Image (cartoon, rainbow, N blue to C red):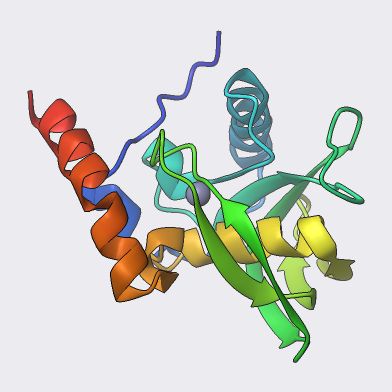
Length: 173
Ligand SMILES: [Zn+2]
C-alpha cells in the first residue's frame, strides 16, 4: 500500500500554489518514488504533490504515447513549467484522482513543451503530444491550485455540482 495519503476535493491544499524546489537530495528522490508508488496504487496516469498534501512543485506522470498506459515508464518533473502550447487543441474526457467519480470533457493544447528540473536538479526540456501532453498540463495546473473542473462551461459545471457537493459532504463528515 502507498504511504502517501491522497487528498480529495475540496481539501484546501488542492487550491494552494506550490513552492519551487531548491534542494535536490535523497529526501526529494524518496518523495518522488513514493509519489510514483501512490500514482500506481491509485492506477493513475499522473499525480501532483498537492494531491498528497505536499507543497513542493513536483509531479509524476506516465509517458504515454496514446491513451494506453500499461507499460509507459514513469517520469518525475520538478519545478515544471509549460513553455510552449500548440494552437491546435483537442477535447477529451478528463478525471482526477482527487475528484473521484467525476469526468468531464476539457479542451487542451495538442502538444506542449515543458521546462523542468530532473530529480538531480539538472534543467531539462521535453516535448509531448496527445495524451501525455494532456496529463502534463493537468498535473502542472495542480501546482498553481487549478483543477480540471475550473475549465468547464457553466452548463457542465451545474451538471457536476451535485456530485461536488456530495464529495464536500463526505470530506466534512
Ligand atoms: Zn488531477
